[in-house]
Amino acid sequence: MSALRLRLFTSSRDLADDRRMNVIAVVGASPGIGKSTLCAALAKHLRGLGLRVDHFDEADVLKRPQFSRVAADFAASGRVSADVLVDATVDYLESSADMGLDVVVADALMPFVPSLLAFGHSETAIVDIVNSLATRMGDIEATPRISTVVVYLDGDVEASLRRAAAREGPGWLDWYGDKLARYGLVAPRPGMADLCRYLAYEREVTIHVIERVRWRLLTVADAADQRVDARVKAIIDGACRVDRI
Picture 1 (cartoon, rainbow, N blue to C red):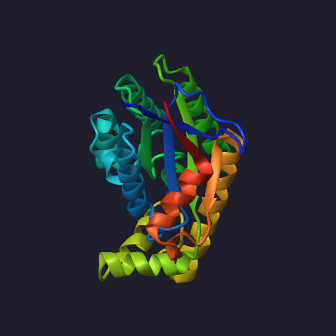
Picture 2 (cartoon, rainbow, N blue to C red):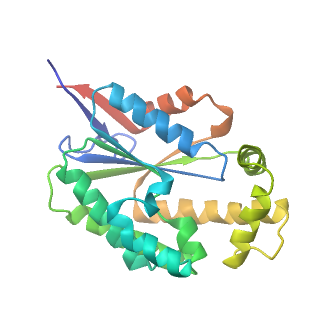
Picture 3 (cartoon, helix red, strand yellow):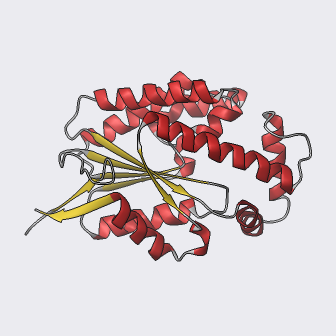
C-alpha cells in the first residue's frame, strides 16, 4: 500500500523538504470568522487522506501538558510572559515532531498577536518574540523538522462579531468588549465601532508580524461567506501539495 506525504509551499513556487513536519497555523480577523470550524474540518480532511494529524484547539493552550505553566500563570495574573509562551510552544512542537506527526493544525496558537497585544507588547517587540519562536522551531533536534504556513481568515469584522454573539448567547459581546477594555486595548464600555477599530489594528499587526518573520501567509478572503469545504479546498490548493509515495 502506498503512503501519503504533505509538503507546504514555502513560497508561491517552492515546496518544503518532504521530511518536515508541517504546521498550519490558522488565525482570523475576528471571533466568529470560522477558525474553529475550519480547523476541525481541515484536520478531518487531512486525516481522511491517511496523514498523521494533531488538531491543536484554541482552548488547548490552557489544557495541553506542555502549556501547564501558561495555564498556571494566566490563572494567577491574567498574563503570561513571552518566554513562557514561546517555551511551551516549542516544547509542544518538539513533542509533535518526535511523535512523527505529518501535520499540526493549530487554531489561533501562532503568532500570538492578540495575547501579546493584551499583555502590553508593541508591534516591534512582537516581531522579536515571534522571530525567536521561528528560530527555535528551526533548531528543534528532530526528524522531521518543521515547515510553517499561516492561514489568515479575512472578512467582515462586524458581521463576524454579530455571528459570534448569536452563537455564544446574550451578554457575550459585552463580555468580549470588557475583556479588551481590562487590557487597555479599547475604552471602557466599548461600542461596536470601537471593537471593529481595535480588530482592524490587530489585523494590521498580525499581517506585519507574519511578513517580518517570513512565514508563508495564505489569506482566505470573505472567509465566513464561504462553505467550509470550499475553505478547506482553498488551503489545500494554495498552501500545500499531497503526494503519494
